[in-house]
Length: 130
Image (cartoon, rainbow, N blue to C red; front, side, top):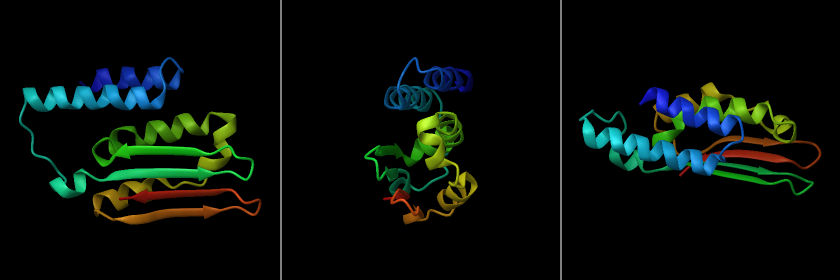
C-alpha cells in the first residue's frame, strides 16, 4: 500500500490530480488496508476524528483553505509542504511553517491553534487542530 500512496502523492505533485482528490484516494487506500488487516491504531478514536485545518489569508485575496483528517496528516504532511514550497504562488506562505512542530503537536494530541503567522503586509497563516 505504501507504493500506492506514493503514486497518489506523485500524481498530486505532477498536477495530474488536485489535493482533494489525492486525499480521497489515500483515504480509500487506508480503508481498504484496514478492512484486510487488523492493526492497532496509535491515536484514540476521539482524537483521530479531528481535522487539521490550514488557513492562508492573503492581503491580495489569494486565500487557501486546506482541511485534512488527522488520520491522513502524518502521511501527507511532508509531501504537501514539499509540493507547496515548489509552487511560486504558495512558496512564500509555507516557507516558515515548521513541519516538525506540527508532527510533535499531533503526537501529543494537541488541540487548537498550533501555528499563527502574520506578515507585515497583512498575510496570515494559521494551522489549527479541531
